[in-house]
Amino acid sequence: MFDWLRKLLGIKKTAQANGRKRITGSTAVISDIHGNLEALKAVEKEIRKQNIKNILFLGDLFGGPGVEINETIEEMKKLEKDVRRKSGEFVMIAGNGDMYALTSAGRRYLETVADSSPIYYSTSKYHINAVKPENKKWVADKLVRKKDKKEILLAAFLLSSKRSDMVIDPKLGYVNFRWTHKHITEKQRALLKKLGFEPNPKEGYELIEHALGSEILNHDAEVIIGNRVVHLSHGGPGPLFKSRIEKQFKPEEAFELLSEEVSDLLIGHNHVSKDYRVDGKRIIQVGSIGAPRDKDPRASYAIIHGVDKKGQLIITHHKVPYDVNKTAKALSTNKYLKPEYVKTIIAALKDGEVTVARLSKK
Image 1 (cartoon, rainbow, N blue to C red):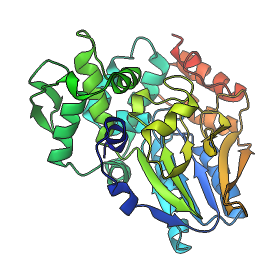
Image 2: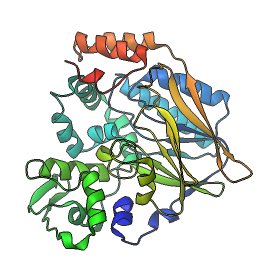
Image 3: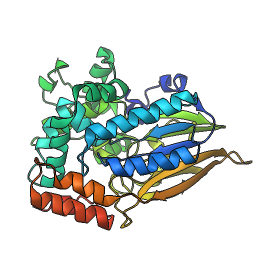
Image 4: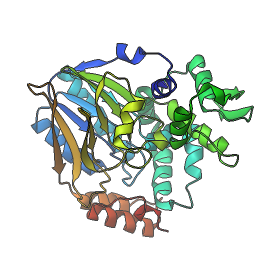
């Protein structure tokens, strides 16, 4: 927990190395399903044809634009059973959409975007209200970290402002924040600021609480494939709400927040398939299953086939068509969403352009 902050501030801890799973056989890397059942089923069918052994999921089961959240979780349960039958590894990490559904801090933050992103807000609220307790528990059992008092206090110290007695989360209680900036260098301070951790007086409470809300969840992991240490993250190393390659930081800055052993970084969040090369290391962005933004309506995922003779990962990107009309029907029959919102979502899905801008229109 907080390994990225430990790395940034020079706090030595390599506990994550002890928990790295060794992955053998072909591996599907999937991300950003967003309640789009038909898109997931199409990818699932392709995965079975490819005889995939392992699944790495990079976050965002929740959050819309799809509305079939319970059915989507049921499909994920089936995928896990298939993987377990093959003695494979099924690894899930959280995305920001999952944080909104699973943490009180996330839900409070979601309320702040109700006016600026009303369509995304509405679909996210629907997921929160509609998910069945047993399905929410299945996801939470995989994504919610066990509360460690020492880690929470460390987080409070690292992320705090000069204000005191601020509520982090009702379930966690109160923590007295006392921050002495002399403990970090100017370079560290600059990077923390870029990631959102120098809150101003007006935003300090929400920003800190949202950051800690993300740290309650498992939103990163590491696995070993061949001789490669592969880091899994939703949008990049750092907190869920401030980690986006090419927005919060440059690709080459990503590895500054990771262990020196890490050779590859797998991410979703941007909803576009793309690869980056950084000094012999690699960032693989796998795209989105349920909410593409690359003007291609097909569902995206990637397959890791193993390593080549040079020890480099062998990865292929895949696009799978699915029946968008079935997704549209589920949206059209949903009584929670406004008809004009449904119309906008369907058009965005068919265009393969499910962007924040399009889902922000009132």
